Image (tube, rainbow, N blue to C red; front, side, top):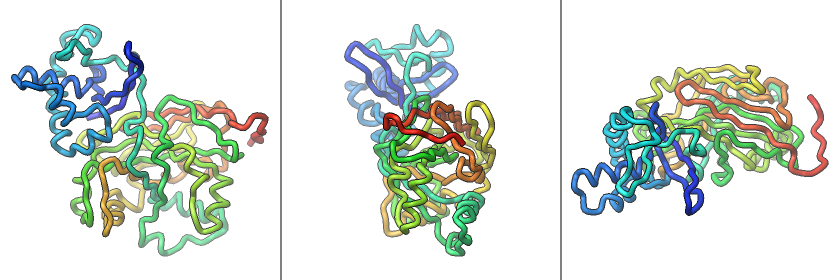
Length: 342
C-alpha cells in the first residue's frame, strides 16, 4: 500500500485524514472501513472504524498489524467499486462522505506529520568518508562497528510541495538525499533476523542542513542541533514493504532546478535498517511512529559536491517506488540578510 496523510477543505474548516493512494484516487481508509462494517451489519460501524483505522497516521500505526490488515482489506474491496465510476461520483460512505478523492482536490502532507521520534544515521560509507576528508580527518575504525545516529526534531517535519524556510543563522543551506523507515510495532531487544517485522514502511527523507552551523557544533563534540533541527522533509507517502520490493536496490536521485546533482542506490549503505533497529532497541523500547533515517547516500548533498542551493531553488528527491519529494527553498527569514552566490 501507498499510505498518505491528506488535508481537505470542508464547511467546518480544513481537516486531516489518512488514505491509500491508487490509480482511482486517494481512498479515505477510515470512512471506507466504516462502510464495509455497515454492509456487514455492524451496529456501530463508525465507532469501530475510528478505533481500528483512525484518521491520524500515528494513531493508525499504533494499531499495528490488525490496523494494516483492515486497511489492506478495505482497499482491496473498495477498488473494484471505484473502477466503475469516476471518483467525483462515488462510492460514498455511510453518511454520504466521498470515499475516493482525486489527488488534485486535496493537499498531500508528510505521511507522518508528527513523528514519535526521529533518529538519523550515518549509514553510507561514501558520504561518511567524504565528510571526514573535507574536515581533514581520517575515517574512524569505530564507524564500522557502531551504527551511529543523532536525534532530530519531530515537530519540524514538512511535507511535499511546500517551501522550506532558509534559517536566519546560516549562509550554507543544504539538502540530504535519504531513505527512511517508519516503525510500526513496539519492541525491545529486537534481533536483526526479526527487525523487518517492525517496519511499517518506507518514505523519502530530506535532512535539511545548515552546514556552517553544523560544522561548528560537531567540532565541539556534540550535536548537530541547530544545524539540523529547523526542518526535515518527508514524503510524499509511506510505502509498505510488500509494495517497495527490494529496499536494498532502489535508485536515489536529487535534482536542483531540473538538473541532476545526485545519483545513488540504497544498497550502497554499509548499515542496514535491521542492523539499526537491533542496535537501537538494545535495552531501549522502539515505538510506532519512530523514524529511522538512513543518512545521506554517497554524493547526495551539496556539501559533498561543494555546490550550494540558493533561495528560490527547487529541490526534487526521487527514490524508486517511493515517489518524488519536492521543496522550494525560501528566502532567508532575516530581512536584508545576504546569501553569497556560489
